[in-house]
Image: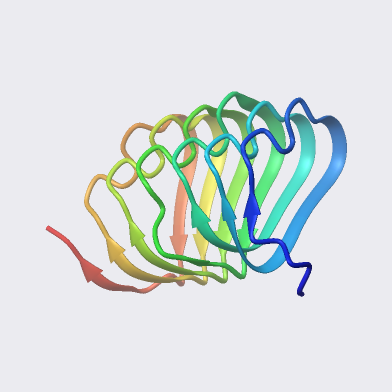
Length: 151
């Protein structure tokens, strides 16, 4: 896919609500802080080809059924990358390469049915990476080998 999309700017989807599906797809694009902020009542949000996810991408976004990050090459999942994303049925990160999952990467994520990391290649998994998620039903790490775990 080549849509010439390089970066999703802050508040690009401000106050988007009541959508069945939102798909953002590109070979390699960056999600800026607040780029997916204030989104509500979206059934399926699919992000394919994410290369960079800044802190606070999803600030004040809620009531999404499923957020899927797939076929991406993230240098890292930063601390607070999912901060203030709430009332979510499922977060899936799959079939992606992730250089580093930082301490507190899921911090600020709250009221979530499940988080799935599936079929990923993970470079470094830092202890405490899931700290700070509140009211999380289940956390799955499946077929996602880690090259190095930092102690």
